[in-house]
Amino acid sequence: MSSIPSQVSTKMKAYYRSKLPLPIITTIICIIAFVLLLFTERLNFLTSNSILSAKTCSRRVGLKKSSEKTERKTEDLIDDRFDFDPEECNVANGKWVFNSSIEPLYSDTSCPYLDRQVSCVKNGRPDSDYRHWEWQPEDCTLPRFDPEVALKKLRGKRVLFVGDSLQRGQWQSFVCLVESIIPKDQKSMKRGRSHSVFTAKEYNATIEFYWAPFLVESNSDLHIVADPKKRILKVDSVKKHAKNWVGVDILLFNTYVWWMSGLKIKSLWGSFPNGEEGYEELDAPVAYRIALRTWANWVDTTIDPNKTRVFFTTMSPTHQRNADWSDKGGIKCYNDTKPVKKKSHWGSGSDRRVMKVVSDVIGRMKTPVSVLNVTQISEYRVDAHTSVYTETGGKLLTKEQKADPLHHADCIHWCLPGVPDTWNQIFLAHLL
Image 1 (cartoon, rainbow, N blue to C red):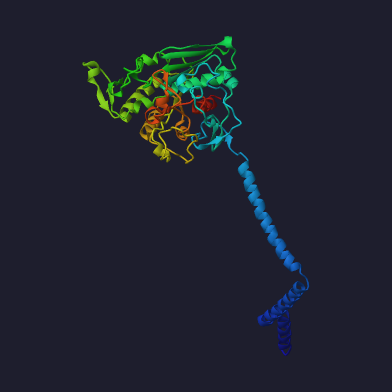
Image 2 (image 1 turned 30 degrees about the horizontal axis):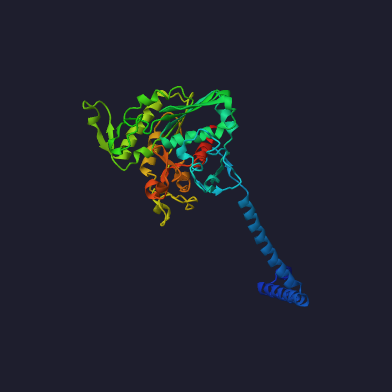
C-alpha cells in the first residue's frame, strides 16, 4: 500500500518536468525575443546596409511603379480594337483623326462625274485640311476603302442609291472612289432626270442613283417645287418609284432633309374625291412615320432577302446654327476649318424624333435592313460643307453672294471628296 503514494509522486514529478507553467514559458520567450532584437539592432548599427536596403527597396517600388506606367502607356499605344463587325461594332462611337499623309482616292478635278455643286476646290475653296480627317471607331478598326475590292464585290451586280441630293452625293462619291482604276473604254455614265447609271463594263456592274427625295410619291419628284408650302406628298404610295427598284442586288435608301422645312407636311393617302385638295397637314415626324411605313411595307412584301440586300442611310445633319457648336462669332458653317471636338456633339440640324422613327419602323420589319448610321459621325464635321464654294440655280456664287454667307452659305451638302467617302467606307465594310 505504501508503494502507491510513491508511484503517484513519481508520476507528478514527471508531469511537471514535461509541462512547464505558462508564466515561465512566457518569460523565456520574451527573454529570447529581447536578445534577438538587441542582436539585430547591433548589426543594423554596425553597417549602413540597412539604409541602402531601405533605399533600394524604395527604388524598386519606384521602378515597379514606373514600369507599370510604361506598360500602361505601351498598352495605350497598342491598337487593341477588333476587326470591323457590323453586329458588334458601334461605328458611331469614335473620333475624327487628322492624317495629312493620306490623300483622297480622287479629286474634283480628276473625277469627271462630280456635280459642280459639290466640287469645292474647283469652286475656289482655299483650305484642304477637311480632306484629311479619317473616322476612327473606338471599338473596332474600319478597313480603308479599296476600289479593287469594292468592284470585285460588285461584280455582276446592280447597286442602287435611292433618295435625295445627299444620297446623290454618296452615289457620286462611290462612283469616284472606284472609277479611277477602270480603263476609260470600260466605263460609262448615263445621266437622267430621275435615274442615272454608271456602268463598269469589265465587272458587269452598275452603280445607280434614283431621285426620290421623300421615297413616297410627291408633286416635287420630277419637277422640283421650290416652295415647301406648295409640296404635296402621297404618303401611302411608292408605286411610281418602286417599279425602278426591282431586280436590284443592293439597295441603299435615305430621306430626311426635304422633310425638315419647319412646316407641316401636306399629306394625301387613300382615295380623295377632291384630288390634291383633299390633303391633311401633318407634323413632319408624323408624316415621316406614315411614309416610312409605306416604304417598309413595300420592302417586306417585295424584296427577297436571299437575292437583295437592303440598306438605309440615317439622316445627314445640317449645320445652320453656329451657336450649336459654340462658334459665337461665326456665321452658320462659314469659315469653319476643323471638326467639333466635343464628344457626342448633337446639333439642332438633326431631329431625334426622326431618328427614333427610323429605329422603330426598321426594328419592326421582317426583311433585314442594315442601317448605315452616319448621323453622329457627320455631326462633328461642321468644316466639310460646301459653304460658299458651290452653285445655286446652276450658277456659281458671285463675289457678292460669297460675301453674304448668312444667306448663301450651303451648310447642308458636303464637299467631295469629303464626308460621304467615309459613309461609303462604312458601306463597303458591311459588304465584306
